[in-house]
Length: 483
Image (cartoon, rainbow, N blue to C red):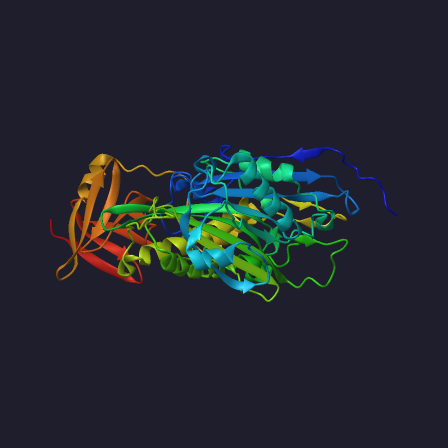
């Protein structure tokens, strides 16, 4: 028997650059490789802005058109909304195409992304696209051009297990809310924006983000991603290389009490990944970047199931004046022979962003009492500890007089040296003809090099002087101190 919704209050929970209050994966001690940017978010790429509109209304039995509602909209602006029409080089890739991202045909053809990127639920793509077009007209997005055409980019994942998806609750007002609240800085994760009603790898999923700082030659670049994560089977959930899903199989994480019922197979769902970078990349190189995104998804347990829409878009904010309707322009690009650090950063950021979405998400009950439970934090930490894959979140301080003993040059093999030096109060390691990486102390004599997934252990002689170090990276090797 149908009954009135218990809750009648509409919560339009809008979060954009609000300080990151929710717990993130690193806060639990989950170890990740790579050095994140200051916010560990896609907004670490200068100019990128993100905004949300989150719609939560009602509880109980699903009455189409009334609710319960668990959905929203996410807006991503490559150069910020105030920049208006200012295209960026872009490209896209699909691992499994059981989903939608509009506007990709022209991105492939032209090499440019000309619009913001909007994320929502499956049945709201048309509404969001129309609202963006109307916003273009209302705000003169094309800066006075009297004749223009455009193809807004709108992507989706399916939230119909928790949301009254056939009630079409996303309206123009929600699209405008996400747009107007877009800004840079720290952004919220979990049950927000387009990710509000999503599930992932057997638990509550949603919106997640992460970033990496990399060095190519003398230049530092940022790679940042945002995911709308709604995919995967619990049995495949892997965190930091540990089979968390298998360890938690006895824990009830999903409770489906009403429609949709058995037609949804375990592993069905989707993931949208948006990648931004300030590295100067051309469209064909951004295609290569987008093609590496599935590697990060695979690290956490994604399999590209038949029922999954796994669609990715990568863009570069470099070459700001590349788009010109009337004149030839000169552009820069990273050499293909030097692009590997961006591939690495892509995989690392995607992996962490997905886990961030799961860690930040809260248990959510939706239509018909259907419930997706959050990833259990304490149980996850205990499993990681048991597998020796836990990183203490306590900050370790090493005295300057001890650090001074570590500085110097170490010979790993003939003509190949590791140089340890200090800069701006931090310790770094540089290998012959290779990059420079920060060293993070985990004890007084042991340092993690997260950027390469290695560890340095300093060995002291009987006089408490450093005579050698041990490099733990694809095995163990000793480097003797020579200077």
